Every structure is written in structure tokens, then in C-alpha cells.
Length: 462
Ligand code: ADP
Image (tube, rainbow, N blue to C red; front, side, top):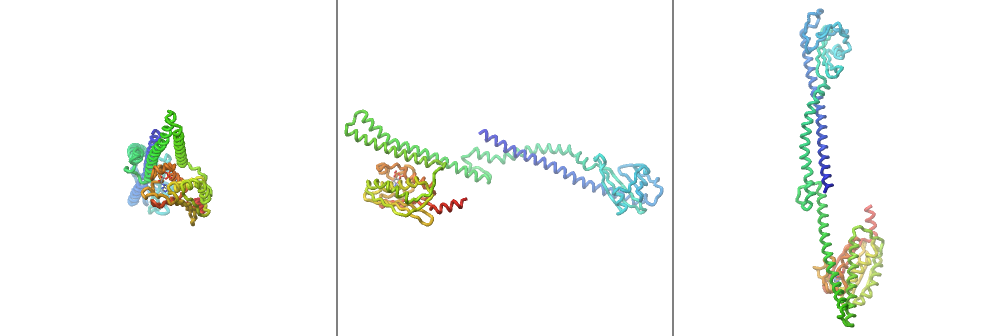
């Protein structure tokens, strides 16, 4: 629980920080760019004003063809007016004494005015905080008249904007923190809800991207529940199955212990105890086998196996058993190779054939066959026995399911044989088929991929 909370906080904090950084970045960039744009507009405006002043001044004719500039008396103000001769000497300046001023011929706006008729320039002051705007025009008498004006530089505008920018940033920061807090909460909420209500994930509104995740979890959830239920049923069944023979054993031995059995009885009771203990042993063996097959971690040794050869060996093992039941056991087929676990193949053939013998009639037949067709190997165990009603055919592969319990027990059945067969078939990707008719007999087939097909498939996978 603790770890989960910690990660929650991390995700939210991450989103928050990113939002805030993004906002701050946007503010700085916007301030910077808009200052530049506004300053450009401001510059054009100042230049346009200067241009107008200069032309107005020119049109007054005060500065043209006159030798006596001492009469010109312009007020000192925002605007500075300078008259420059062809040689660059300053003839007049309303702010300073013309004679003390340096030669102006190399000033770009003056140069331009001489060559093109007019010129303009903006120069930063040494401290960078002021800019001077110049506009110059050529007069008819060959002199250049220049008007200039000082103003804040782009840097000082930007600089003076910093306190405002910081104030806006602070306000926006607070706003962003509040907004992102709610935003992240609403983003994370469905995920949190999901995590807290694993059982009703389906009813919750969630992101499309998370759907597959939910589906997988749901599936796993269902599987876990199903498994738990199956395990519980299995345990109950096992206990029940073990109880019956143990009760018999306990009962008979108690009778012998109390001396309540005569010599004849003792033999009979001992035989019963023996039979029931054997039954217990087979049961326990089957249960152990099933739990071995249940192990998810698969270390089954798979090799190239001739299923026909395996079936022959198994059939030989069951010959005596068949004879005892008055059943004729035959086998036919041809060498047929599959990728399989040899012992498991013996188990499949054994369990199927054993059933075919046990659920048969006196004088009945059992035929095992193994054939290849193009890509498959088909094992078939066919009997002329009692058959299985259609409604039971699917369920006989479940653990402890029997059509006729007493017949199964009488012949030493545990109700687990076909469950083991099904398990092994699944491990080998084999398919089970059943055709059966009560009173006529049963044929169970198991279809495997041939060794060649298996090889082709595993090559394709690589
Ligand atoms: P069991 O140990 O009881 O034979 P299995 O799992 O091998 O358990 O089989 C389950 C049930 O399926 C049997 O109890 C029996 O009713 C039925 N069954 C299996 N094989 C045959 C068959 N060849 N003919 C008729 N019934 C069969």
C-alpha cells in the first residue's frame, strides 16, 4: 500500500513540475519576443515622427542658402537639430556649440543623406540603456540637416519590464499550481479509482489506452477466482475419495483388533484392507501425477518419439489385464513420429486403453491404432464397450467425474485417468476427439502435429 501511494505522488509531482516549467518558459519567451516586437513598432513610430519633423524643418527654408545661422534660435528640447556641411563640419547645433563638435562625415545617416538624399540610424549609448534615433535629409544647398531624439533602448525597456514580468510570473505560477493540481488530479483519478476498485473495473470510466490493461487484469482476476474455486473443489473431492477406503481400512482393522473376527473373517478383512490400501495408493499416485502436471514451470523433456512404438509397448503391458476382462486387444498402424515426452505418451495410451478394457463387455474388443496423415499423427483407442451417453461425453475429462461411480470403483478407477490424458494432450498441443454411443462402444482420438510440422512451426517462430 505504501509503495503504491509513493508512486502516486511521484506521477502527480512529475506532471505538476512539467506544467509549471512549461508555463514559466512560455512566459519568458513571450515577454522577450513581445518586447522586441513592440520595440520595433515603437522604433518605426519614432523614425516616422523624426522624418516628419525633418521635412517640416526643411520646408521652412530656414537652413537653406543662409550664411547667418546665428539668427536661427531653436529651443533646446527633446529634439536635437544639426546642420552639416559637405565636408562633414557641423555648421549648426541647437544643443551644443557647433565649433566644438567633431567632423560628422562618417556618420552613416549623414553619409546616406549625401549619397541617397536621406538616411537614418539608431545608435546605442555607451551604457546601453539609451538609444539615439537619427534622421538626415539633404538640403537643396548641398548641406545635410539632421534631427535626432533620444529614447530608452530595447535593453532598458526589457530591463524595466523585468519587475512586471516577475509579478506576472508569480501570479501565473500560483494559477498554474492551482490549475495543474486539479488537472493532474482529474487525469490520475480514473487510474486511482481503477486501482481501488479492482472488482468493478469494468463499470468505471477509463482511458482507452488503459483498456487492454484492464482487460488483462480482469482476465487474470477471473482466472484466479476460477482456479481458486477449482482447487477448493478438488481438495474437497480428494478428501472425500480418500475417506472411503480409509474408513473401510479403519473399520476392518478395528474388528480384528477387538478379536471380533474368526480365522475365516480375518483373511477376508485382510483382503479388504489390502484392496482398499491399493486403491488409496492408486489414488494418491494419480493425484501426485496431476499436481506434477499442474506445475506451471515446464521442464518436460521433449524428444522425437515414435508414437506407434510407444503404443505397442504399452499394449503389451495391458495384455494380461485385457485377458482378465475377457477382452481382445489389438494394435495396428505404422511408425509415426512426434515431438513429445515419451513417458507422457505411455501414460496417454495406458489410460485410454485401460478405460477401453474396463468399460468393456465380456468378449469385447479394443483396438489401438496410430496413423500418419500429411501433417498429423492420430492415436485412436476404440472399444466395443458400454459407451458414454452424449450428455456426459464432455465432462468425463473433468477430475473425479464418472458416469457410473460404482463401476469405476469396482474396476479400480480413480476418476482421474482422463483428466491426466487431457492435461498431457494440452501440454503437447494435441486435440482430443470422442465418438461414443451407449451400448455400442467408444472411440477416443488424440491428434498431434507430426514431427515435420512441429519442426516447420518452430523454425517459423524463429
Ligand atoms: P476412471 O478412473 O473412473 O475410469 P477416467 O477419468 O479414466 O476415470 O474416466 C472418467 C469416466 O469416463 C469413467 O468413470 C467412465 O464413466 C467414463 N469412461 C472413460 N472411458 C470410457 C470408455 N472407454 N467407455 C465408457 N466409458 C468410459
